[in-house]
Image (tube, rainbow, N blue to C red; front, side, top):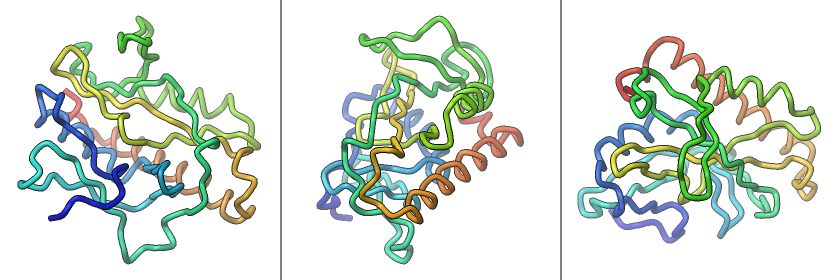
Length: 198
């Protein structure tokens, strides 16, 4: 497999001491979080993650070529913002499941850690319909703490900054991001992620 021409879709795992743990962790978000590419201004809502043998230290993201309608174009980088929020595996704090916390500039964890779904729902409720919370991933959001535990930093789309897109596209993006989050909540409730997060 060749690496994608778009460098935003080839994530480096060179610095991960526990690459297997990192790959297991990130795979549970493959169908539940969208990926944004700043270099081409595209948002991918349907994609697959691969770990090609010939590129052992790379995570390759391939948008589904048969689902071109699931890729949104002309998403300006000014509409994507850091949140400082980290999704962490429960194993990092000796618990099952996924958790949400704030990360410090030095990549340290905030002492306040909340269950992922509960924390996300509070954040989503606090946002207005005009500027909803729309989490996305970009290259560099998969990180490792304490040389052993993978975490995901979340970026978010700022809907008011997507004025160049049609109202139909803005509504569609909002719907698909929230539907994917809901599917992750369902998976967590079923315990599908417990083994990966422990």
